[in-house]
Image 1: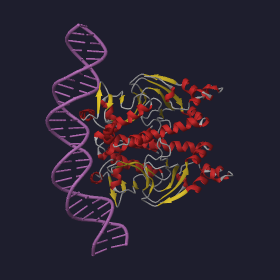
Image 2: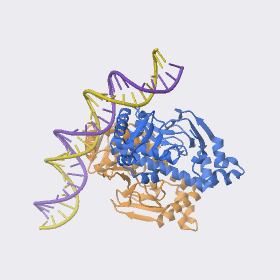
Image 3: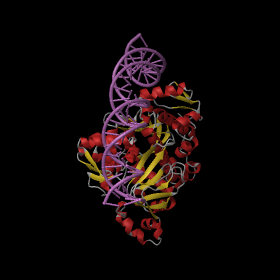
Amino acid sequence: MRECLEEIRLPKAVLAGEMIRQADAKATLGGLITAHRRESPAGSVLILEGEETSSIFLVLSGWLLATKSLADGQRQIIDIILPGGILEPACADRGRSAVEIQTLTDVTLAAIPRKRWRGACDRHPDIDEMTHRVIVAAMSRMSARMIRLGKAPAETVIAFALCELCLRSTARALADGTQFHIPMTQQQLGDFCGLSAVHVCRTLRRLARNDVLSVKDHMNIVIHDMDAMARIAEIDVEALRAEII
Amino acid sequence: MRECLEEIRLPKAVLAGEMIRQADAKATLGGLITAHRRESPAGSVLILEGEETSSIFLVLSGWLLATKSLADGQRQIIDIILPGGILEPACADRGRSAVEIQTLTDVTLAAIPRKRWRGACDRHPDIDEMTHRVIVAAMSRMSARMIRLGKAPAETVIAFALCELCLRSTARALADGTQFHIPMTQQQLGDFCGLSAVHVCRTLRRLARNDVLSVKDHMNIVIHDMDAMARIAEIDVEALRAEII
DNA sequence: CGTCCTTTTGAGAGCGATCAAGCGGGGTGG
DNA sequence: CCACCCCGCTTGATCGCTCTCAAAAGGACG
């Protein structure tokens, strides 16, 4: 798992340039990150649903999950956060998280107090701009997923989830456009798609049988026929890329 | 349909006080609203999916819908915006809307260019704070709905949608806590809940038969047994109120 | 070599979609 | 004023997708 600040796609000048030369290193993005850097092993829970928190998470490496659960144990993965993602686990009840945050892989992140982040945003329009962009991208992703959760057949939901993760991985140079790895079990992919693990398995198998993709040892995905995938997922690849990246 | 600036729940001082006395009236919130006020009749489409837009919408009165559609005509209502809501129809592709925006009732709104709004946010932390709060509330709502869309039975999805709208209506003094009106058809409620209109009807009927609620002429809802509703919706009423309001 | 977790495959059941027909209210035109 | 029509609601019947339960196979790890 590479770790790279560049994945926080900020103008290089902001990251390493003027800001660093300021007197108070903590006021710079680089300083903020250094000061609040944390590591967490795969499978750890960072924040529980409803727990108080006053930090935003800047993901430097590794994958995070935001999930919600119902009383009966049903679980839904609300969003998956890749390196470079910014996570604000907030709801209207300020300071309380609407979702549970857990790591999917070993993760390096900066847990930056909201106030400091806001300060950085105020001083640097670039950071503010990026924050905003990341948030609306997350909402676009959620919207696109929501329509398929509600109405589309399993094949469409899964194909969409795979396309989304493929595009996002590729954008971060974690994939080459057709091959990528998902550090999730079929059970977790099911929680993401609103399907049972059994049905995820069947659907992946059917897609593989039809030569649309192949899945090898623990979610190494190769898409053989991107046109077919796009058709099944009911997306236009380029439009989706523009919308969610 | 009452129209009231107060529903934009800002400190009164900001709305009518210091800001108004500033030299440039357009720089004040009140001035911004006055300058960009628009009216639209029920059923009109304000923005198409993918259309360019550079404004945020501040809803002064009436209800709006944010929807997405699939190629086969399937439609999902992503969010419902009540008076006092702020809508930023953006996706990562800046200036392009991820959703279609349409009016559910006659609507009064202020379509404020994003740059002006950002300006107001920069000058007035209160406005910035409120904008942020409204956005995270919208994301919390979407998250809570998403888990039920994916996994819960129809009864739960519908009960949740009704509880959500009841709480939000009550918070804006459009309802008294148990009685409220939804300006939507059962078809639209189905698009919101990921269900067919037929099944919405059956489910509402069953809830009515069990004395949980009653529905009269075109979606005037009375909740008779809020405990039962909360149980069916799988929510804690107070927790949900804190989370989404 | 045994244990645990994940994946795979089969069989049966249930929920919600779809198709279809009937009902009812409000608006329009005769 | 009445007849008609359109749209939304209601209810029944059938179908199909996806869940659940169950069992077995494949891997990772001690």
